[in-house]
Amino acid sequence: MNRNITATKQSIATPQSTGLRKSLRRIYRSKWMIIMMIPGLLYYLLFHYVPMAGILIAFQDYNLLKGVWGSPWVGLDNFVTVFKSPDFPLIMKNTLLISFYRIAFNMLPDMLLALMLNEIRSPWFKRVVQTITYGPHFLSWIIVYGIVFSFFAPGAGLISTFVRDMGWGELNLLTDEDYFRPLLIVSDLWKNVGFGAIIYLAALATINQELYEAAVVDGAGRWRKMWHITLPGIRSVFILLLILRMGNILDAGFDQVYIFLNARVYDVGDIIDTWVFRQGLEQLDFSLAAATGVFKSVIGLVFILGANKIAKKVGGSGIW
Image (tube, rainbow, N blue to C red; front, side, top):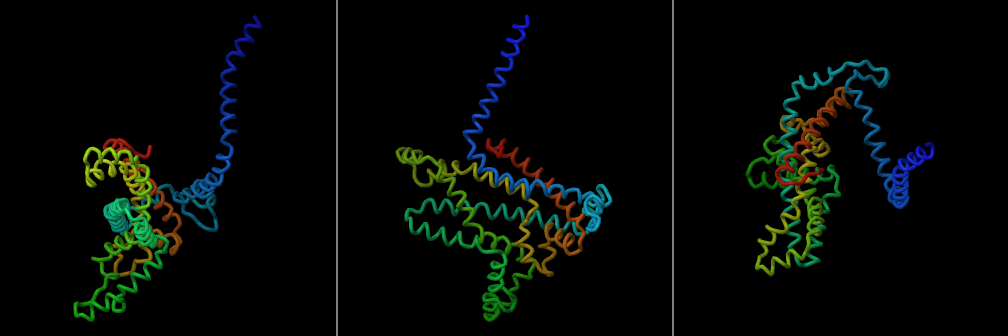
């Protein structure tokens, strides 16, 4: 009887121990890949997950001297203050408009530039165009603003002075509410179109060249090959970038907007991030700034989940 019980236990334990040995063996075979992953995991742990403890500030009347654990809890009062602020409707409107403009007018030029570069048959000319379009990506927004200022500064810029001397009136793009948002979109397009094109070029490189050869045999021209092979080949990348941008819908580009912003265009250029910067750092209201950050994160999560679900229903693919 005892022998039967022992044999039964051994038969039950054997599959588990075998699975454990297989798992350990698999980990051992991948030990160098796991070691290379450690720095990246530590980065996300230290700079993305540990700081999430600061979310507690959003539910407190935070005081620097008392710290996180000594500051009094106020529940959702900070969120109520944000939503009842007279500036909230304006900054929400500006943020959404600028973000949608970036998505609508900046994603298609990236793809079009990649398609044009893909059709260039001269290697040296292709490298020259890539270098010229990719170069501005390495410039900081301060330098970009300096370039824009040198051309469009009211009464002193190169183009502004030319327009004035020609008798066509004053050109004040930097301080005109009608031109501020287009100026943001155009400067962002000039700076980042080359970088966006590289992502699509990488996707184009993965398309099977035999498909193009088969299309040539069937008599397809350049436009037919682009419509039936190239565009479907980069559709998944386009959807992925669109979903990621929808997740950052409330991040309208703080660094660019903050540098370009001035008192005359606050009504069309003040966004959530610039408002949070003034409230959190200039007025030292850290709780209000943290509550706004939590609100942005929740909205971003909702948008990215919704965009992913719609993409899977429409195109059959998403992030997960």
